[in-house]
Image (cartoon, rainbow, N blue to C red):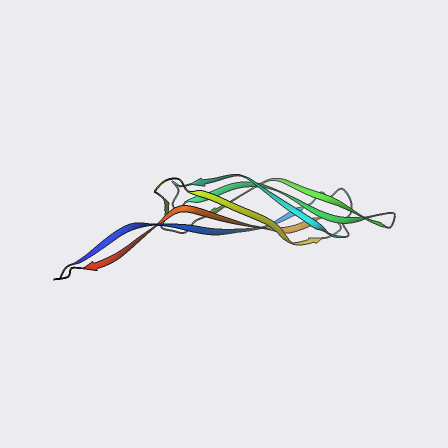
Length: 144
């Protein structure tokens, strides 16, 4: 009885995380506490499907709120960190096929903290890629 190995591309969705610490070293005022607001703007998100494994590259800006004292009154301000860049790789065996993949993404800032000289936080982004392929194989035995 013969066994045949068949290789195919399995169309699937892949999710990859990105985490990076960001520090703003130029607050306009002396921080005394974290604020209640922070934001991340992701842009120029691209998929390089020719690299092995495929890579998602992107740019982002971060804006973190902090508190400072003005004559004993607590005030809020923002510390802005522009023009950062990052990338994430999809798993080995991943490739583009069967049309164009689509990417969706989201990002938040967590774990904010301050000292008298900086405001810091952790950027957590999640990327989901639809219409991406993984090569898979299976064996089929001939039936007499």
